Image (cartoon, rainbow, N blue to C red; front, side, top):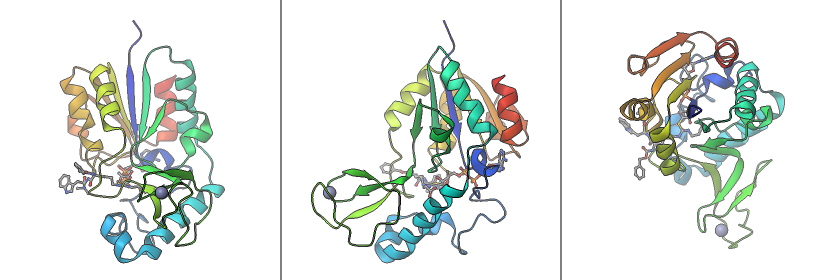
Length: 226
Ligand code: BV8
Ligand code: ZN
């Protein structure tokens, strides 16, 4: 029986593509911490600032490419005969552009807009002027399709079911600062999975992993997948 894999990725997997991480040097956007802009309160108080934050990050996607880590994970996804799920905290589209198919964005996606009134989603490739109406219900209630702090990450039941079946849980490029993602290693371990962390430096959760390998994802991931 082929092993079942769950792989969690964070901003570190996109760092070598040129996308800034959140909590490292330069991890601020125009001096704002992600915790201050990525909240329902910030969206209510200053919708233009929050939309500008996400529009700027979406626009930056055009200038970046998947790196060796994304490509190695896509190759694994294509070749692995057993169960495999890549759960990303990232909202960029680099895993998709590298070819990964068994992918879940637990914190949402830059290239999607959500209607706060009816829950309809629509592709969002460029900035939507404030007041743009939802094509489904007509409400002027479109927001970034992003999971803000205090909001429930997407597809948690599916993620927890995958962790319960996992033989191996691998965490790549995340600081382990944000829950519930930071708690997945404990869940996987409790279900009897083996656990490996691939990260540039030790993270808040390193002690919870059976094994931690330190280095850039662009080097560590292809070596691990090989
Ligand atoms: C929820 C949106 C409940 C998209 C994000 C107190 C204790 C515990 C928890 C909490 C608490 N107070 C509040 C909470 C809950 C809160 C939380 O965890 N807060 C933290 C700050 C304490 N969590 C939530 O609110 C979550 N929701 O709990 O809901 C609930 C229950 C019932 C009903 C309703 C609600 C929601 C969390 C999602 C928030 N949205 N982002 C976006 O804007 O991007 S989180 C944000 O942080 C990003 O998504 C990001 O992905 C995520 C994690 O960051 P990382 O990906 O790890 O990035 P970071 O920069 O931190 O680290 C990068 C790592 O890479 C580093 O370790 C670095 O060394 C490494 N690295 C760098 N370069 C490389 C590299 N590694 C390899 N190679 C390299 N080249
Ligand atoms: Zn709507």
